[in-house]
Image (cartoon, rainbow, N blue to C red; front, top):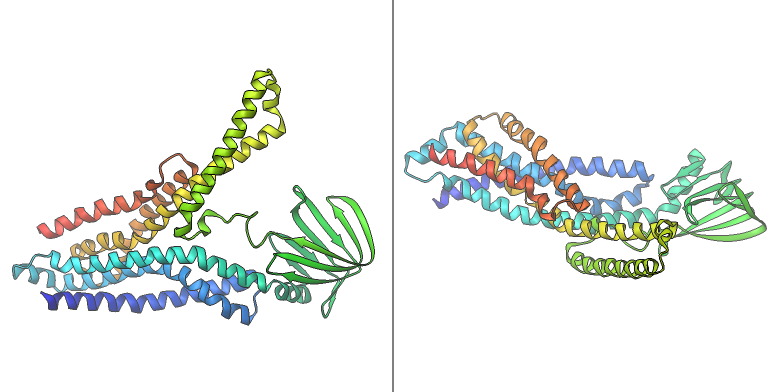
Length: 393
């Protein structure tokens, strides 16, 4: 019995690790190249960014890889009538199944951790490397293309002389209450302060415009510091960027903020109703408060959903194997690509849409956060049904 368990674990883990290395390498190459092209990164930043991209590549590779390993091993032993031989010896067929299910369970725990690390440490690391390289990236693209554009600002120049920009135009999006800020100069130099997320601009004969209106001229040499808000998202990170250990605290803080907003709105509404000032409920100020309350409530829903989503994503490994093992045994096909395709295609068409539906509805507050496990629950029912038939026959 122990020898049979060791044999199965050796086969499954051997295929799993070999395939995982290959898939991760391919995904890393594709991810690094994509990030390098998008950010305009040089060789040094690319080397720095690789460790931060590795958890993200692994969290996508692990579920498919463990399913692939299960399909290969159990499809082969079933086609070789090894399952029939085990039954003929009076050994319960679950002896063939439970070692791989235990391995899949342990790998699922690791996958949860990878999901957590990838979206917190990994994303923040990529962001830091990009921020520290922003000055180099901008000057490199301005030298070769005479233009640089990001989601926060854009720069166009007539020419670049070393570190001096000739006749630059800098456009900052969504500054000053949503207005576009435009800086023009005869010459300018840039320096990015990565610590504070500020772009420092030294201008010669500069002009500053907000929207289409000229605000002021700045003859001679002047310096401007433009906060870009790149280090955080208006002081708050996205719920998907928090590590699991910090989410409960953030939920408590957000609920207190929501409660404070609701109390302020209730007090103001009571005052306006007492003096019959019903028109105050249609003012822009009241609409802004309603929008702030709605955003705060939405953030609570998203924070509540995030831990459930990460655990559901991680434990997809276990439920993939729960479906893949009995299916491979029943198909009795040594062609592992056929077995893997017949197993993975329904998962791709069924599991991931259910996961996306559950996450979307939970984040909107229409359904409780545990609905993100709907796809896993469906796989569990299907897997247990097929496993029962394998044991019976």
